[in-house]
Length: 86
Image (cartoon, rainbow, N blue to C red; front, top):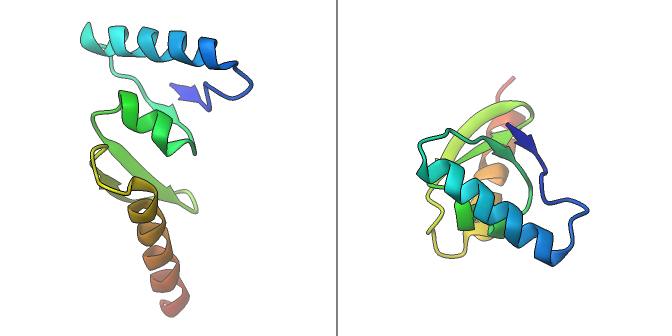
């Protein structure tokens, strides 16, 4: 379980981290990464789960075209649902 693992890393270290995580996953390890860097997550993930306000609200395929737009659409829809639900 990694929380924002690429924060404060230089670009070369991000590449090393990405390679290491990919190798571990290839070896069968389950890896959970919490990050707001969707582009970075999409490079190593086979699934993306979306959370909002501490709740799981859905998932996205890492190969989704315009991933950030899909991510924010999911968040906005959830915010609207929560706003309308007492």
